[in-house]
Image (cartoon, rainbow, N blue to C red):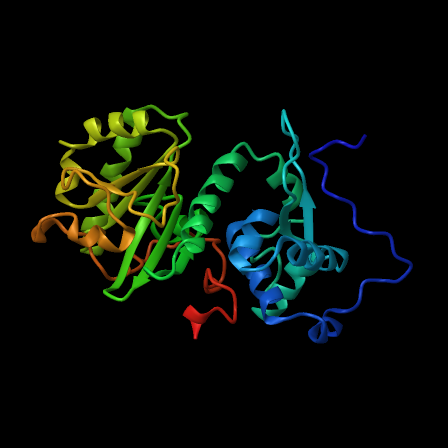
Length: 319
């Protein structure tokens, strides 16, 4: 039996891989969008891709197999104690070359490495990274009719923009009838102490001062007990003079799209994401508009590749 963490071999073929220009007639706008999403977020499971693409599991599996056969994707399956995990997909060598051509650069300049799939499969942060993706794909799934996710930046892009100040797990913008609200996401797996978790607010306070904004920081925690304990730590935190924070415990029988967000040092009831700007007094409400970059982009970071829209082409919200 092969190792469960070895990337799946490409299907054997007697023909060479077609040149990149020959793929122009074979790839759809949604295929290209998926490649951009994998460049941005490094790894997504078949479940994530199915949920994001608003398609059936069977259709997703069929198309993913085709893209893998073309070398556009690579995949692996981590071993689980019980049952089997979904396939985990990363950007393949042909996919990286194609995106490099689209952006007039090289795969290395995009941050892609030939061992990208192996490095991802054995990354100590894989579970955490997939948890971030799950939270945001669940938010996308349950979005309508309250609003939709119009931006989703990866941890890497956040680090390139604000790394000297704060390092969130993701940055996103939620668009609803009342306008836009942007937020930073902190996905807690329970491995860090609450003291260390609360200390992250100090960095966000520095970011708030640098960007002249009042950011919204959302914490997702694995249990309501840990959420309650974190609230006790955060309630009197000095950084709350500069930012707003809210929490969600993932053991609730609902998704992040519902009325699950509990503001810190404000209302005692849970709110929808779109309601969070009203969860604090007027002088302590989070900023509604997206945050500006601070000009602290790190040397050697990627060229100016725009982040992909988190919704696929053809989605009504993108019209």
